[in-house]
Length: 191
Image 1 (cartoon, rainbow, N blue to C red):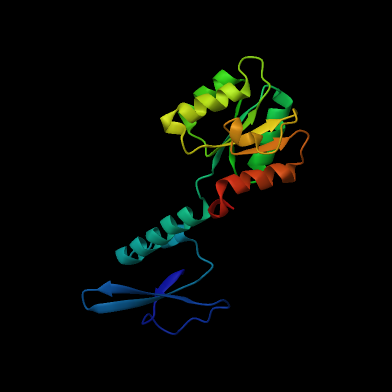
Image 2: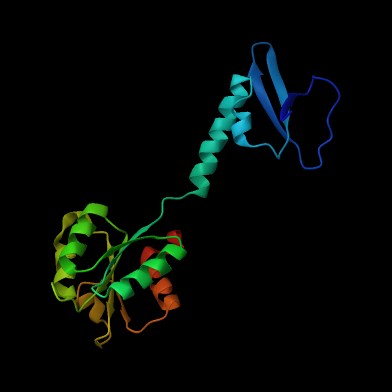
């Protein structure tokens, strides 16, 4: 038995800490002792409706607490190997990566998926990263998106802002550099 009324007979000794739930009843209340090893699913099939409802609310809260909505990060990079590598790193760190292999495709995906961060390559054949960044900044629905410029070209300090980005990483960079910059852009609440 996973949950039992305290007045059902002799107390059962549990090896782990007991969980108590007091259910409202027409004649006062009923106190249950619950085996901590039982699953919420099994509690949700208990005959007492108030116990089922309580277990259901715990299940919903547990799901919300354990599975936060992953932060979307869009990688706009024409080099497919580089895009896949970045995507793999982002996924491992708990982000939800999306990949676009050109500027025009990237703009479409940004408008569709509204990522929190865009990692943007500057040198792409179909559309220069500067123009992509400019289009992002002009789009009202993307005003809060953070842009991390990823480039092999050496720019002077402070160039990220002049190009429309929020930060810049010079290639080659380490996965830890990427992780640190993405976390900085998202702020402390996303770490």
